[in-house]
Image (cartoon, rainbow, N blue to C red):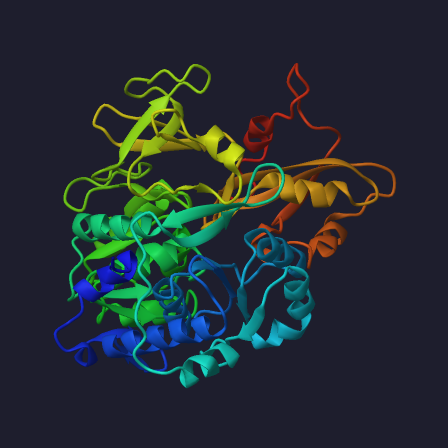
Length: 506
């Protein structure tokens, strides 16, 4: 048996791995496919030397660098389960993830190591190492010392390759278990659907703790032997300057709204590009239209989840319709059902979206009851997204049954924020909603019912700092005398969304 996911990389290696660039950084540092093989083997050997066994979890909360990709691949080659963590997570959040996943190794930024050491020790982590934005630290040092010639640990299609935590609407986050074939099969499907080849050069400005940047973008390049222009973060001017050398870009709506503010964004500037992909949050139709008018390119929107990778995509050839996420990908079955009865609905009828395919995860880490509740008897996964399929077969996402907010490409669940706000002195209750936002897709917004001596907007935001990751912090705190409720006493968030729908129009 081979290592199923890494064998995908081996199959597409150029004849001379040293001759082809895998990653290039803005500083001009180039890493070849020979470097990829050598460094990922070194990280795999270093992890084994640290006592990592097959199936152990390797957690990483580190800034983006080429070394993070080698660490990810090293964990895969060592037979471990990679657990990337958002760099915005606070100490209390990290404590939960390390404990719940029972991580064997935790790699963090050197600046945070002292503060997170007791957190890791309490969680039972056996080894804490460091890696900074330059790709240096004790983890890199351990890889430097590793002997050459690592033999990949055999892992099959159904063995776990990664766990990604996705917040729940109530309670703590859930760990989505992704197998080697969940990742490999989806990468191969997208390579074919989006026409990627070894000649492609991808502008990569996404974070690598998220399924979009780590698994969709990176794995597609790995599956073709292409090149990534590896940016630490969104930089509209830098992205625009790279387009004459690139062929494709993957981003969230924020990328496109920021680029549209650049006067240099023209048909000539984007002439060398063949594909612009947007996902992780809804793209406004206005953005879609303006981008097409300025560049002559139609942005390709797709639909995916942490639990499923990519499910649907607008066509590479054919009409890309704003406000839709295209068709189910090959090998992905999608249906829309009545949330109450489970009956399959017809064209243009809105209901719950369910999907099934090799891309769909294995379940939630150590949550068998939650896993069972989210899968139907015939294997379809209940996404929690409300949508419809129109007469032409295009899928439309019209809402989320669980009030999920997607802001800047990151999932935000209201309950976690409401719990923090409701605990503040003088707050009676709160409701957190997502409102249309041109830059972030949705802006996290809190509506608060204040009692005697309640804090004002600035005070509430100040109290939330350090308690929540920055992307979860509300962009505005609004105040109301009471919250709208239905006959059963449930807060009607749809009423609040309608009432404040134009808050961020300006």
